[in-house]
Image (cartoon, rainbow, N blue to C red):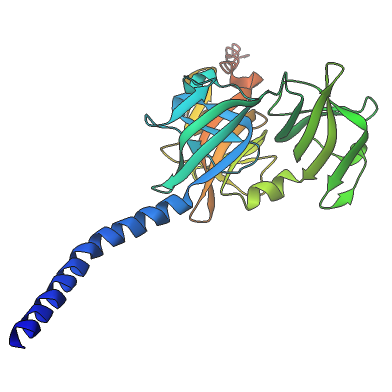
Length: 295
């Protein structure tokens, strides 16, 4: 009887030890599962691409997607570099959050082809050109003219509007298809760019600089409802040349990559797209020589 009791005690002790040893492993598995559950799959059209900074954005997400050495970028089962991608490419991305950023583990290129040759595409960008009479427009993320099909729906906040009611600087989501060599929009969903940026986790903006404040390290652009902060990490570029905030001029056309941090919109990069005044400033005229005194 005592021997049976001893065996029972040993069995209980063994089970307890197994549970203790299994605890960390189970916790590790649970943590791994939790991280895996945060991973996401997304697809869309590349709207912004910065190989030098190892990041991109796509039409169906406001997130900036980062790329590292472990990211597999594939096209037709062949590995390619991030620089091989182009704005307008359709991609499928597997990504997960890591240290506060979304990092891609795999990018599959060519699921629907490039917008330039695709039969159907979904694009997001800022309206840069409008011609209601010719029923055509252009957006910041495509070099191709987009025509409205006869049945195209133009919507703003759930309400049907006319193309003539749209304004450049507004952000639009466009569903389009190719017909007769043209890209025809079947639906345009418009949302004011100011509202789009106001709640975005990350955003790409293109607009005109309306003010620059070097003392406060910020600037205002026409398509943002709030100041865009500039930090020591912000890259400011013009034709491959680095600039400082003080060199930016009011009226310049810029493309800004920004993210929200501590409730503020912080620029990651600012690229000057059109800046006629970037040329060296004219030297002030030499003061006229004082005239000889008249007696």
